[in-house]
Length: 111
Length: 114
Image (cartoon, rainbow over all chains, first blue to last red):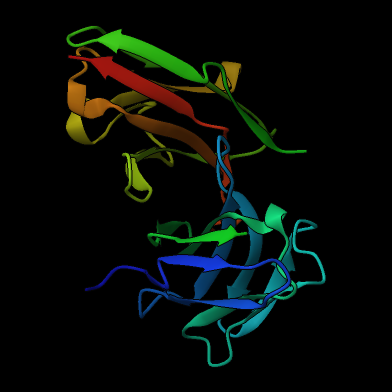
């Protein structure tokens, strides 16, 4: 499969727990993006990596959120002390320039 | 701030009706424009995109969109919808300096009655 993959596809957690999501981009893509999509809204930009460097973070990304891309390949997004407001679809995208592709997303439900 | 506005949040059509979904953006510079579709239970898929050239862009499944620079618009059209077009449609913009950092509209939910 040559597309963007995300794992897990669904995650249910209790409020206060930590969760981590993984994104595997298309192999030759040097840029990787995380977005969040809540019900009834379009995806909103969270953060972006070029290779292993995190170049931009949205104000939506509170201190409880951290993202890494340690070797410039896969990326992880961790949410600490989850809150019910974190329930959303977390989307990853990868690109080479302005041509990119979205992954299937991880749907997080915080109870 | 850069933004994308989609005028209709919900649209209901009968099969064979014509579709036009409005999209306007606010950004003064050069932009790349996209329409994505999200079928129920599926992930975002690219319908069509405009980077430059002919402002009338044809995409998959009979969809087309027209870029009107003077109106900052990129409306999506389809002459005759099918039940299988039931989905959510997102207009999106990438400012020319933005890499693939995409700004999405809120989406339009289309329901096509068989």
